[in-house]
Amino acid sequence: MQTFAKILLALALLCLTAWGAAALLIAGPQGSLGQALAAGMALPTLFAISRLWRRPGRALATGLLLVVAGAWLLWWQSLAPSNERQWQGDVAVLPSATVEGNRITLHNVRNFQYRSEFDYSPAYYDKQVNLDELVGVDLIATYWMGPSIAHIFLSFAFADGQHVAVSIETRKEVGESYSTIKGFFRQYELYYVVADERDVIGLRTNHRDNPPEQVHLYRLQGPLENARRLFMAYVERINQLHQRPEFYNTLTTNCTTSIWMSSQVNERHLPFSWKLLASGYLPEYLYQQGRLAGSERPFADLQRDALINTKAQAAGDSPEFSRLIRQP
Image (cartoon, rainbow, N blue to C red; front, side):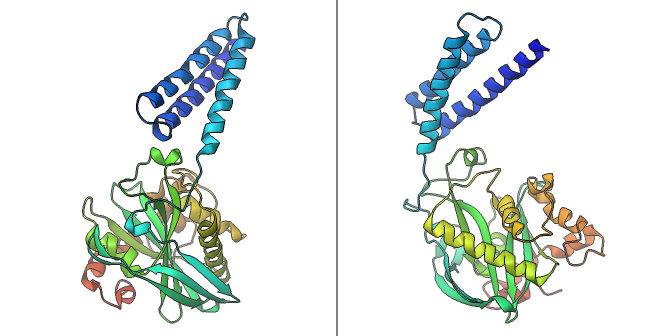
C-alpha cells in the first residue's frame, strides 16, 4: 500500500512539474532563459521522487520543492490581466452598460461592415432595450472542426424585433492568434463581444472561409423571468470586465462554461455535463433536457433546420438580417 501511495505521489509531482514547466515556456521569459527555468523545475522534482524510497535527504528535497513552488507561485500571481494593450481591431473597444430600472443602454455595440474576415470598417453604436420587452433567447452554435467542438453564443430577442448578440471570446493583441493550449496559461483576456447579429453571425456565415463555419441557430425555451435574469447577469459581467479585466481560460472561462456560470442566477439551471466542455454536443444536450423549442421533433430534423448559412448569405448586409435568417 505504501508503495502504491508513493507511486501516486510521484505521478502527481511529475504532472504538476510538467504543468508548471509548460506555463514557464508559454507565459514566462522567451528564449533560452525560459527554457532553462522550465528545465530547472525538473531537478528538485526528480530529487524529491528519488527520496520517496530513500529517507536520507528527504527534508532537503521537501525544502527545495517548497522553494521552487513558492517562487513559481509568486511569478504566476504576477501575471495580471489588463485592459491597456495594443488590441486587434475587432476587440479594441470594450462594451459597457448603463442600467436605469428596466431600461438598459448598451454602449459600444459592434456593427462592423465586412469586406472579408480581416478587411472591415469598424463601427459602434449605443442600443437601448427594455428588460420587460425581452421575449426570447437564441443559442448560436458555429462549427469549423467537426461535430465535437463549436463556438457557442447567445442572442437576446426583444418585442420590437431587436436582437442583442453576445459572444464570449478571447481579447487578442495585435499579432496574436488563438491557441487552445495558450488559453490555459493566462495569455488572453476575457472579452464579451456585444454586437449586431449582422456583424457577429454574418462574419461567420459570409466571410470566414479558412476554414468555413457552419452556423446553427436554436430558440431556447423556458420562463421569460429566467431569460431576463440571464440577460442582467450578462450585463453585470460586461460591466465587471470593463472595470476589472480577467483572464480567459480554455477550460474554466470559455464561451460555454461562462454561459453556464451566468445561468446559475436561475434555480433550475442546466445541470453540468461533459457536453459543456465538448461544446459541439451542447445543442443536443439542451434538446435532451427539454430546453430547445421544437423538442417534440427528432433532434436531427431540428439541427438540419437550424442551419442558417444559406439564409445569412442571401440576407447579406440587409437591415432585415435578423428577420431573414429566422424565416422558415
